[in-house]
Every structure is written in C-alpha cells, then in structure tokens.
Amino acid sequence: MSPVEATSKCLYDTLARMSDVTRILTAIGEGDPSAPAQLLPLVYEELRRLAAVRMAAERPDHSLTPTALVHEAYLRLVGAQAFDHRGHFFAAAAEAMRRILVENARRRTRARHGGNLQRVDLDSVAPTAPDADEELVALSEALDQFALVNPQAAELVKLRYFGGMTGREAAEVLGVSPRRADQIWAYARGWLLERLESAD
Image (cartoon, rainbow, N blue to C red; front, side, top):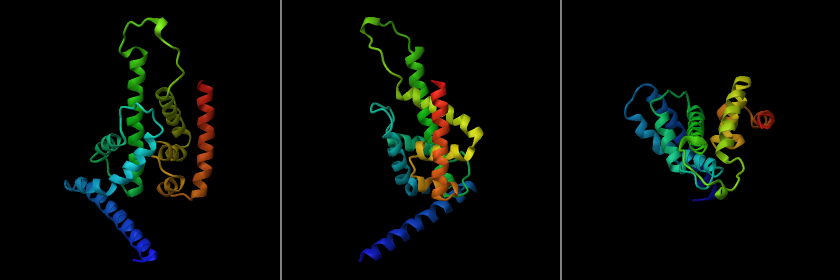
C-alpha cells in the first residue's frame, strides 16, 4: 500500500469512527440500552489520551491513573445526559475529568487541614510550599467565577487544561476558528492569572 493510500485509509477509518460515535450517541439519547457498551471501544483511546495528558500535570503520587480517570469519567457521562454530537461528548468528558480531579484534590486538602487529625511533633515537620492540590482547587474556583463572565472562554480552558485537548481540537469542539480559539485562550489565561494572583 502506498503512503497516499495508507493516509486515505487512515482518514476514512477516522471519519467512519466519528460517524459511528455520533450515531451511537444519538441511540443513547433515544434510550437504547445496548448503545453505551458500543460507545466505549470507539472513544476509549481518545479519552485515554486526554486523561494521560491531564494526569501528566498532576503529582507523581496521585491516587488516580489515567485509566481510572477515564473509567470514572465515562461512568458519570453515560446515562447522565444526551449528547448532540461527538464534540459535545468530549467537552462533557473534559468537564467530568475536571470535576473528578478537583474532588480528589479537595479530599486530600481536607485531610491535610484537619480531616484526619493526628498529634505531630512540630520539630519533625519541615515547612512546605502550597502544593498542586491547593492550586488545582484555586484554579477550579476561579474557573467557576470566570464561567459567569465568559462561558465560552471558560469552556475552552476546561477543554485545553482539564481535557488535554490541543488548541485546534478545542476550537473544533467550540465551533470557532483556531485563530479565534488562540485569542480566547490568551484572554482566559490573563483573566485567570490576575484572579489567582489577587487571591494570593
């Protein structure tokens, strides 16, 4: 098979898979009980890739693995709502992953700040800097405030930061040009950075 034929076949397979995802999402929305089992094999690799990108930014000792994150997000998604199209599904997946990571971060932060009280010798404790859990919770709270100001920009942040999507992928999901997505991304980063710095 020539390189052109191989590329064409890969493109055809991708388009067919996208079409199948849309068809199955429609079936799920119509209440077909067998549809969720058909969906996972089609979206698993892409969800796994998104989760791996997101988990790479987490602490190395994180209790969740990309696989566990995908499974938990998938369980929250299927049956919870209807999806208009493939992009809507992946946007919802990014939001589900965000919520799961933030819930885990909050749980660990509560445990550190008195949730599991234990007597500790202060001479044996070294001072620590704010960690990733607290930063993640602060970012999520700022993002919730930002969504009230600019829902589209907040959605872009969720897709890129929590969903692990590239700018081009997020632009496709939002239905805007890649250039417009870059402009929204620059604005969103500036807004969130200012809010996070003022909170400190």
